[in-house]
Length: 423
Length: 147
Image 1 (tube, chains in turn orange, brown):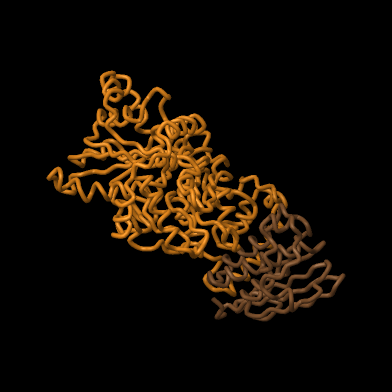
Image 2: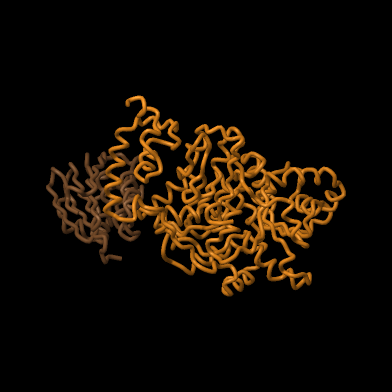
């Protein structure tokens, strides 16, 4: 994959009818309709997946790892996001879901909630040992990291440099599995099961390390039915799970599937949790204006209600949230991660970024500041000329964006149907 | 580039309109990014513009921010019709505030507004007339040396 087609968001031209739903849904105005088909401007796309949700023709989906890709590995490991536990009915225990994953072909399934708790504790330790600057921003959501790099580059220094749970889990497995199983590292495939397309980008184009510890990500959408069928056919597994609950789960870690999950574990800190892509942008704008300085940790997840609202999840987020909350309550606030283990890993830098997240500011109107000023003036004139109907018929999401595209030489005033009439 | 070629835009701010607080400074911030100014100057101008915008909202009846950008500098002139400042020297000292308890409850009024503006500008002038209003002139140099 190259930078030009780094995004997993894919538009099926045969299904796309060139309507305007995705245009207005895109929070970074990264979509245009060209020759009757939706096109994504790679530099502007942050992989949030809003367009996937809003397309009424199912013409947009996400390129994630497929089952056949798994054949490249002799030993397959699944690391499911804790969101997966909320996708099945209340009677289905998390253990049964892990069993079902083994039944459908994974040699090993690594439970993530304990690592989420570990990550949480490491973030708390980082906050305590860094009294400044504030607010620190949690980096678990890869879209937030990308949004900050591009749109809020001056906030890169505020990102907590602790790797997200999925990468920590994969790193632990990479360090131990080849030795324990006596298999070549390249024969081991470690796959994340994800509710969102952005994880695929964070694996292929990591921002805080040279190479991801994960080999791919399968969407919950794709794996839901195989798990569902396996659950139906495996009555013995159910009994086994009930009689021998072998896996240890963390209630604190389980909660990170929901917005506020990362901050809930931080009892002695001032925290703010935001979810949804537009509200996240709004709050980051405020941070850039110098606000929220009295907040220790700002948790942003771009999906509504947190990862549980991911565009590649199957169950509606309200039901999934209710189920996860039930599990959180059952498991309670008991910690399962040994604090001295965490401290040891923290001080060995096992949990931290290998390099800081670097700013990649969006392109200005022109590289030359004088010309940029002229273009901005011309854009203001164009905005006054355009009809302000924001209809999308020109192929841009709104009149102001069309004016922007015109001064950037990406569009013409005649693209606007109302301008044509006046001629 | 002379003044006539500068990018100029005027922004109105209404006193007491807390629901729109920060919108103008946010727009200025995004505009400066589009004009290709460096991150430190954008940040300084954004923080100063926000403080000035909040001062209008909290204390004045009506005000405006006049933005002017050339390749070398950003200038924001803030004028309001309001009560004015009794003692400008005092208002410029950190910790001094005339904010009401309601404003403090909203997190404002720590007496850092004007000092914060002064700290973030390369050139700062203030003229105030009691009963009439206040005028601020803030200049940020593209190659300024402030932190």
